[in-house]
Length: 137
Image (cartoon, rainbow, N blue to C red; front, side, top):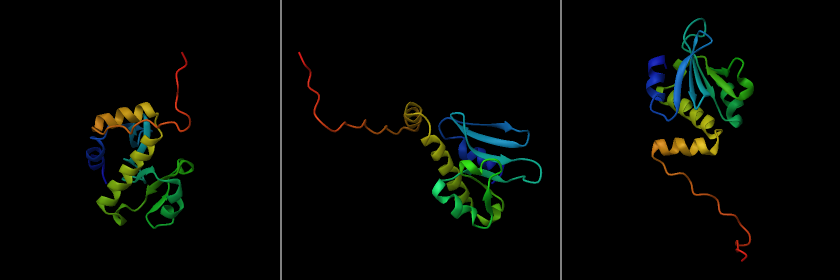
């Protein structure tokens, strides 16, 4: 996945921004929180890194073509070291899931705002169990 493909994929998602950081990396964020990084120059050129579920981190990094992301592995990020091993559909699914993982850690208010931008109604508020509230006069 190159930079234009990644831009096209992510540009329509709510609150996504992109920019160059650390001179060599195109970074994608949702509400200011990183969810994908594409290296643009140097020996890691065209490698993409993203967040994964903690439960899947070891499973994924045991696969050929995926390794722990430099400096970010402790936060359960992986790097696709051999992109040719993965279909475009798999890559898009990885990036979308990373977006969703990061988005899920945003404040409830921000999440509701993003859902509204997507045209999805937020889930109803939880009803407290227990005694019904009775007003005293």
